[in-house]
Amino acid sequence: MAAKKRQVTGGVDTHGKTHHAAAIDGAGRVLGDQEFPASASGYRQLLAWLRRFGQVIKVGVEGTGTYGAGLARHLTAQSVMVVEVDRPDRRARRAKGKSDPLDALAAARAALSGQASGTPKTRTGPVEAIRALRVARRGAMKARTAALNQLHGLLASAPESLRHDLSHPQAPLVDRCAALPVDETRLTDPVEATKAALAAIAARIQALTAEITHADRRLRPAVARTAPHLNAVHGVGTDVAGQLLTTAGDNPDRLRSEAALAHLCGAAPIPASSGRTDRHRLNRGGDRAANSALHTIALVRMRHDPRTRAYVDKRTKQGLNKKEIMRCLKRYIVREIHTALLADFTTLNTA
Image (cartoon, rainbow, N blue to C red):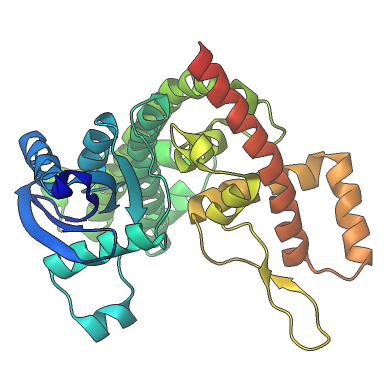
């Protein structure tokens, strides 16, 4: 009877093939630890094992966005409160050591103490679908950028005759390189070898451009349907909206306030005062991709929005530099983004 009334907090150190779980009581005493397979049956075994010790209040899980995503979804579906736990910092690991049981126990104690209190993303709705599509698009974008750099680097050191032929802007450079004739029997000649390399890289760029265009055709209607209010915010396009949705997740209500969203995006002001100096500095933490999205919105508004341009002029006269003004703008933009996200979330849940 005592065991049934006991309140239990779990902690899980997640890996690709196995998860290590630990259980503690309300006073932080260790009840046990055990390893389970990272599979659907393993998730069921892990929860059943925790419930042997008493009533499971909450479970702290490391890596809810990667190796722990499946476990977090299973626990949430079973009405178990899941808390997102950061990995122990290096100082703590140097002092206490590193092992799976120790990490699982640290996750459980972080959840029990309230040190870890973040609600993980549910990853079960349209935002997760958008995130998956954006992963493929982002990979293609990076590959195309690398290929373009290779193309220009190779062209810069190409034989003079070839560089001269490609310098005339009759057509885009990529198309010209892709159409270069190559003599396969003379590939020991630097000119022919360079032509072959340029043609191959140009063909890769064309294929990646087609992949990116196809990804945009898929993403545009998906983002528009999921977040019409966010899409309507001045300066927000499909890519920016997709990133902000990915950062917030399918359950943006987990962000308790606009200040929480600002902190998550690295747009919350950090105090940097000393003595008679009272100031704030840029936040270098948070989700840098989301911060980049806010930066894009701020740049668009600084160029095209009269109110923003007037604000920039006013703050410049007050002595703020460009970085400080951008920090202020991002914080104001977060307020609009938070309102739009909650409106879209409400619409999705009532549809």
